[in-house]
Amino acid sequence: MAPFDWNRRVLELLGQIVEKLSGVLAVNGIQFSLAYTPSEHSEGLLFWDTASKTLGLMMPGGYVVLQIGQEIYVRAKNDEGSDVVNGDIGYISGGEGVVPKMKLAQNDDDTAGKTIAMATADIAKNNIGYWTSTGLVRGDEDQPIDTSSYPAGTMLWLDETKGKWTGTHPVPPKRRVSVAKVIRSHSSEGVLYVDIRERHRTFNAEQIEGYPLPNETLVRHYFPGRDEYVNQAWIFADGVPVSPGSYTLRVRKNGVTDMLATTAYDMTGISALTRTELTMATTEADRVLGTSDFVTAELASDNDDLSGFGAVYVVLSTVR
Image (cartoon, rainbow, N blue to C red; front, top):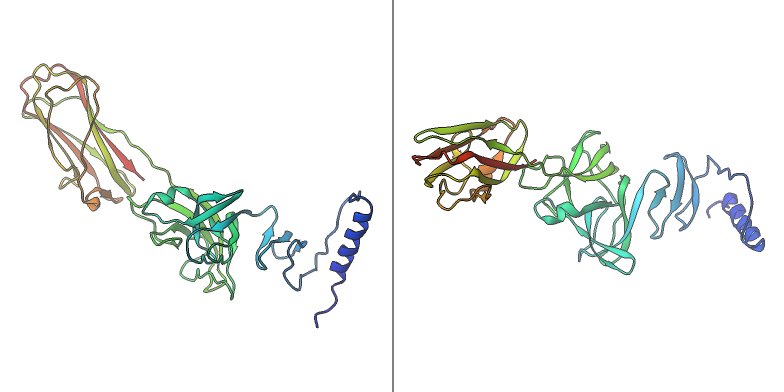
């Protein structure tokens, strides 16, 4: 038989007294026991959490304890169609009354940009549970989180597998969503600090300015110095050529691999400052830049008279 819990009994009696006094009790402060450890999970129990050094509030469901001031929860329904496990990563997929619905996110589709929280306990299909948007998520023997492959301090990223995370930095075009840092490395009792944010798209106006003379090629180099993905390219002109003709544009990785689907474009009918989007190469790997790669943008023309142009601009857009 469990020992009699005098602390809880005193609180129950105090609550009854307050109720008799119309629900109001004026006090200067409440001193919680610094040595009290609850013997079991009791929904609504407020106590001093000696491990976290803050007040702990036991939530519905028999497992989750909110460390007040250190965590922010989202109470949401599991809308995935299957069980969610402790440490899974989700996004809001809808709502049911005032209760959000959550599905699992992944880094290779649009759900990545909607990622909001990590499950802080197992949640059965169609059940309501708690997801941490900021704060610690812990594993234990019953609901383990395995962080043994990652030293403390490792940044974790949203993976391409639904709901999962990885220590490998995603390569564009996969979306880069950092989800947590490892606080404790352990095979089952891993601890994560959740702080979810997408490493936002960065658009770089890496441009060729001016215009090429006949049989001349303008070349510009771009050295990203970081992992990037060239996702769009445009060309536009300041002014209209006297004698419209054709031009050739090549955007190449390391001066070898073409990053555009076509290279020859017709200037006939072009109007001043009209932007034309260029068709990128279909092979995504040809558009991925590592830290040691570079891009050359090469513009040439067979036109005898481009004097009407103030400049021809080629603009590349990259995603970091």
